[in-house]
Amino acid sequence: MKWMCLAVTGALALIVTAAGAAPAFTGVQEQVANVERAFAATMKARDHAAFVTFLSEEAVFSGAGQSVRGKQAVADEWKKFFTKPDAPFSWEPDEVEVLASGTLAKTSGPVHGPDGKLIARFSSVWRLEAPNTWRIVFDGGVEACGAK
Image (cartoon, rainbow, N blue to C red; front, side):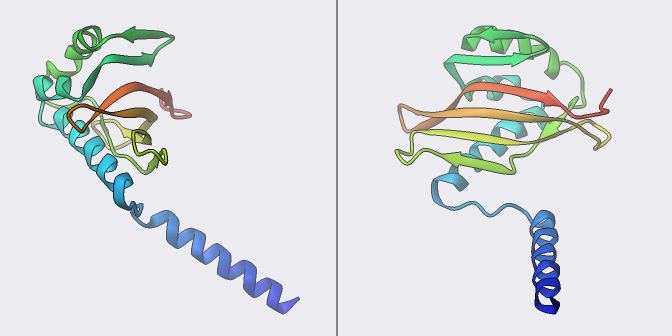
């Protein structure tokens, strides 16, 4: 019984330690995580033109019960988030999964308001397109409980 208690305590310690640590990505996962971070940096830098370069021609962004389809439509819809001097939100990937083929990836992570409060969780799908460039094809989010 004593060893069981020690095992549970040890497992909980590992979980708590892992939860506070930055995610450890490797290889293509790290490459995709860096692309997601660069994409997020366009919002912080207030650079809509740079934001658009990450969009696939077939991009579909979903939210608030509707989907926006196509690079230009997404660019036009998201322009409103770049009009004010301060970014209305920020995001960072904490999960990255890549197909064995290395051509499709999913990222997800927290979205924070300008005050740092958790407001949502995003999920994006990236596709490796020519010329060896990761572009976002799907994006959406789920509002955090109690965010309103």
